[in-house]
Picture 1 (cartoon, helix red, strand yellow):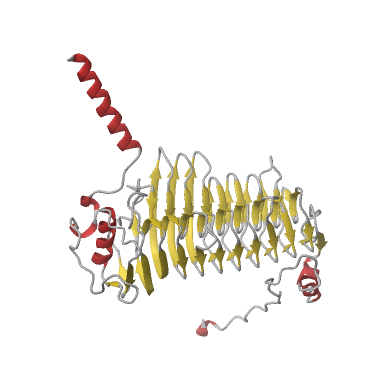
Picture 2: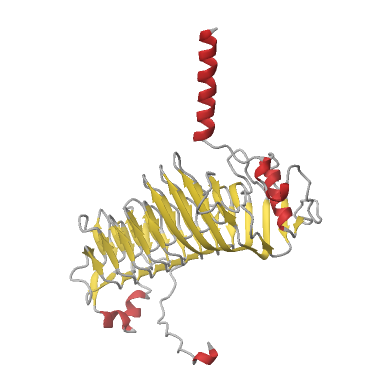
Length: 435
């Protein structure tokens, strides 16, 4: 009898530990409006087909969607459409698809509507969910034409990591197009989370990714081990096209104004936020293992190791940065001296320049490892050395003749999709009465 009691006591303790250490989704009691059954707040109309989607016009119906998905109703291959702006003020939101076993698999059309005041957790009681956002876990779905404004996310994961984004936490096999988010994220974790202003992480797929998306989200992160944190997305293995981010980032890990870690193609993107990291930082991407074209960053960047105006660390293996620039000042830790005006530690770059001042590093890159820098330039008025490329004064970088170098059609290696460079004249400031 004693042995059996000890066995069951041990088993119960083990089960209790499992649930405490690895939280499983949310219970019915956690859902807003006292939702406890499917169909409690039915959609306005529709049968879920592409031509006749389910119509959502109230916060209650959106919360019903979250409840349904938590009950393993994934809405796989079904269509939903938002028909009104929604205000979620006062609700502690439970994500639509709170875990990999409760994923959303439908097609959500925001219909150019806005969801305001999304709140997950609080400063006093942060969320302990691993998949955090308006949507938590999204698989083989589409989300389009949705704006989220004035969101606030507080997360604390003391024993594990999470995927956190204002729109979605963890995304796989999904196209997200023309969506935007504004607000703030404050997160802490032990193992290092993937955190983005719009999306936490998105998996590898050349046919999906982010198109025409943006985020204005300030992010503060504390982590014992390095995570991936980006103004738009924390970690991306899918393309990003015509996207931008303008939030400021500060904390531990691999931080980038657009993406913390990217191993996919980035085209026609930009970031303007200031970045400060205890490890690796880039104005656009913290750690990059893919191609970047026609993109730029303007924020100030600090990273203790591998700090770059555009990219902190750029892989030398089969990846290229082309037709890009960075204008922000860059500084690296005094003990590392791995700062670069464009890239801290660099693979190949082409037809690009850096205009900022670098502290503890060099004007273009600190290291050019097994790679080339063709037709690349750095600011010799602010930096004594460039590490690679050709130095030009501030006046030379601003002179119209500089365009001839960047737009040379005979440039070796020039891609047909490289955009022509132009000089942008700032708009004159209007009188106060017209502002």
